[in-house]
Length: 113
Image (cartoon, rainbow, N blue to C red; front, side):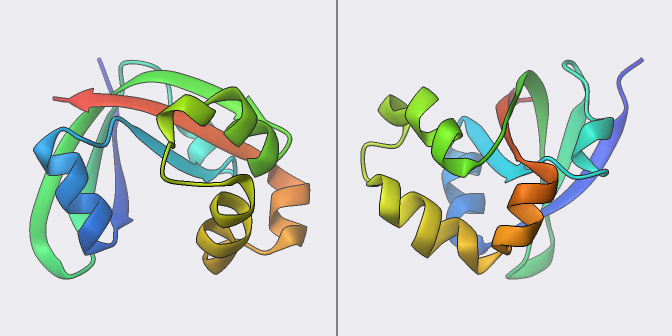
């Protein structure tokens, strides 16, 4: 039986996920994310409207030592990003270099549930 995990997304990525354009999620591979398994469900809450939720199924989990390695492995999925903008501008808003070094990065493949 799949487990349902709770996570939050900012409004723009939430909208892309709801429309089916966003087929992955990138997170720190911390204790919470290490509980994920392929087949589990993730219920995302829209940070802009807490009552707006979206449920997806985990199709793939791929840990990496850091976000740069993740970017290089999945670069074709992020055509709008350069390595610098992906790592520095985007993810450093959420995670410190110390957190990235401690936990690594996690690629989460998803599909609408």
